[in-house]
Image 1 (cartoon, rainbow over the protein chains, first blue to last red):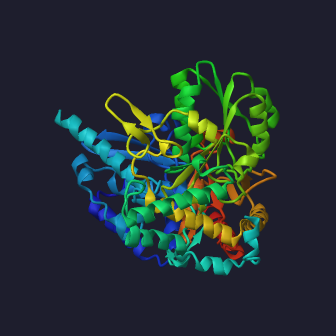
Image 2 (cartoon, rainbow over the protein chains, first blue to last red):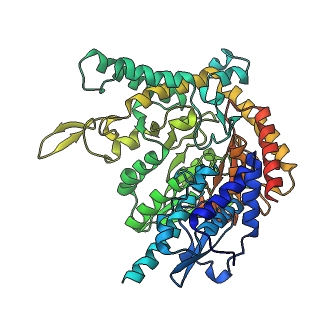
Image 3 (cartoon, each protein chain N blue to C red):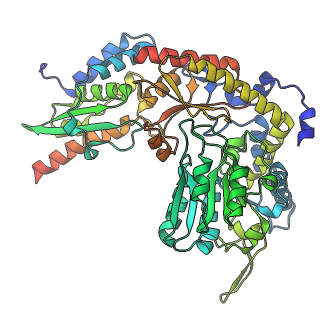
Length: 145
Length: 414
């Protein structure tokens, strides 16, 4: 595992990398590459209940709660979506529920991927963020109970 | 209508493009290439102007008003009804009912004619290539009435299997509801033959004309369909202005749809009598502005020349099909002999959505997904397709941009 970094620090890392890119092609090639390198989700997790609704492609998301921190795993049949998920996981996985719930995720705007957050797009980044936060909220509530 | 084509015997796509202001805009720093026409077409300036002019000069509620504005608005609204009558060759303007679009038209028939005429054990025939709008209303009706929905299968090329259709027809068949042109495949169905066979069996026929009206000459009398539904926004008109055609005799016998103003003759607390056709089915203040502008869209098509438009679109279809077939790994879904200018395709090992995102970054608008035809996608065992659909204003150069856009996308995704 890499050294611990806050959500903000991880966001900045991604923003810094994207600042090196001059063209949309470079940005998307980077995202596509992230998608290809994301570890495939084990088949047992690719079940109906892990599918995120509202995505044009199929997106599976699972989470695990260890020592007060949430860890996410995800997969998709579309590579760009998979790359976007990979970034979200990189930023949010391994943090406390509260940190995840409070994350503003400004990096999405900063790297010029806001269109993927728009509700009109079926790309589903918004649905993904919602589901990621939903898991965090569930763990937080369980802790409080 | 054929006569009008002589007004503009030549078809100049550049002149036509000048009529559509949106085509000048840039998307992601590239000149827009709009190839999502099967979802909705762009609007010519005259249609946009008609909307503006209505609201700026004679906005009024129609039919009941005695003042000048109300009379002008009513006259314009009813002029559209007459224009639609001519455009689809209906017998009478009374057969033209304004709706929000094709979906509402189909639902209107399901909720009125369907509820009255469909009983337990009756059968309704649709096809594998129907849009959800021509599946779900019948499923709801069948569930309510304990009727049975039958589905005409298709070939690998995306053509209806007429022999199978003949076998589905029986004395139990009460309705055949069939798409004229498939939105996902572009297939033109032999509706005349389908209608004749249904009528020989004593069944009624509804034709979903959402995709056909913009491309083909529509003659409801020659077709002899009992109902025909289409949407204004797919034929260069505004959204929210659609049409349901029905044979007069059938419409007269059908129960009313929604109750309210406009559709009544007399109301007392004991009993209400209903207005005559077509107002019987138009409860409440209708979509006046958009309906008025729909006439302008129809006139625009007629003045441009429907046959000339069709020739142009067919040339684009032929050229784009050839070019696409030369792309390695690309497979066109829907290879019917008779097609309109719609091309659905998939690329080996690449998700349609990824292609759509990368094309958008190149300023090219296509549609990706299941196109509201999930059973059809299941039939081809694919999650969806990329669909490029061409209109009168598209050019060969835009096809070239699409092809190089696809090639670039493949390169980036592989």
